[in-house]
Image 1 (tube, rainbow, N blue to C red):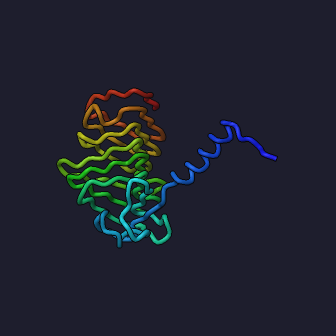
Image 2 (image 1 turned 45 degrees about the vertical axis):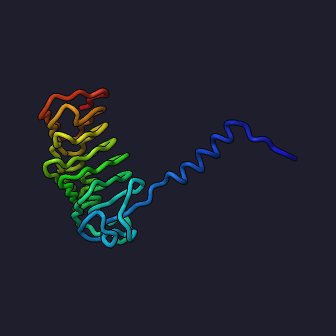
Image 3 (image 1 turned 180 degrees about the vertical axis):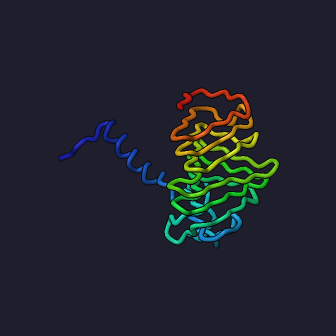
Length: 190
């Protein structure tokens, strides 16, 4: 007996296969150093555009709870977590380089301390920037995110109209400072 699979079944199978292929590998900094140096990462190789990157947190196993990672060239990642967990501390030094994140950058998730440091010409782009706890970030003129979330006492200050393009969410005693006028296409939720 031959059973036919309709379009819905084919779409479901394709989505199942695609979701398995699209799953990002998690990579954690096990010590401070240069992003491009494989030996500082739990995977043994430098992360790329398909990786979830943890700097300062015990995720994944073997990662250091405190780490500073420096970019010496332009880099990319799927998601970046800085200070991922209570008492953890992660710093990302961009220098004059660009970090492109297709998903989310989280500063201080779960009670950690996360920071991004950039020199003249340094910048990042991300779909979402979430800042939690007492963490703070002052955007550089060329930083750009689709959406910004401030949670549990976090703060952010913009520097240019293009820093945030979509939604801005401010909750739990957080502070949003507009250092420049914003042109957002989404909602401002306070």
